[in-house]
Length: 357
Image (cartoon, rainbow, N blue to C red; front, side):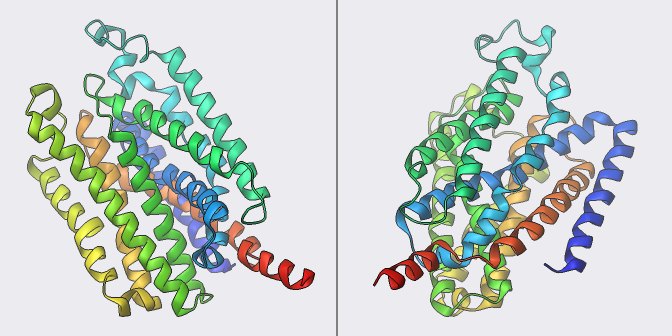
């Protein structure tokens, strides 16, 4: 582990936290908005990494030889991210209309959107995710993890409902059955981009592995774009006031330009780059695409959440992203250095087969 990078991550976390602490005294609601929107990005990395680890346990592939250390390091970020949800849990009425008594009379889903049930569901999500994280980190390789398939199912269900609870319910009168899958698609894309970035910059990948990672990223981009576009297309075809109200603030003014930029930066541009094989086989080319995808995904998370909250974007959102990101990257660098020296699942199975042969 590079001591300089680790100290930079810690310093970034402290600087971002200091700005948020000052903001909490000046405009606490703005800090909470930025905190929730940035949390949506960072919590997706350990959850997406768990899904990818379980998928690799089931299918194998040389892409895992290069990415498993980074994926496991991301999973190790999960306890920190769950702790960073606490400020949101302590200030529900500041973010969620359904948590304010005066705003709940007209809601038809009060049986689901109420504080006690919300806290209970969040506790269940945390318990399931922490249990699966321990299993993902404990199991050594492909075919040796009996919880891989049920773990993927549990993750899919809990992440979908958590996205409804934490993010979609800021506008409790609106709903979309695709929303959860869209969030999962973004989490998979973000986790794969960070894992591929770490593999490309770590110098431990060959051309074939980078080609495979580029192909996987292409598939993840298509999945994210398909889910995002299908939600928009279905709502546009229905043309119902209750449905399109969600898109109106997100396609108006500056947020409309952000949406167009996101479609380019998280969809068209990286896709066009990755279908050109010299880019995905190049360390620099693959790393550049991954950096673009991560930056675009962070902005997408702000776009999904901030227009639905009174006050919208302030510079406390980047400050919150830096505070969380610095802490997460410190954990990531520390854990990745521990995992890199160990045999990857594919390498372990190969060694075992050679020994018994």
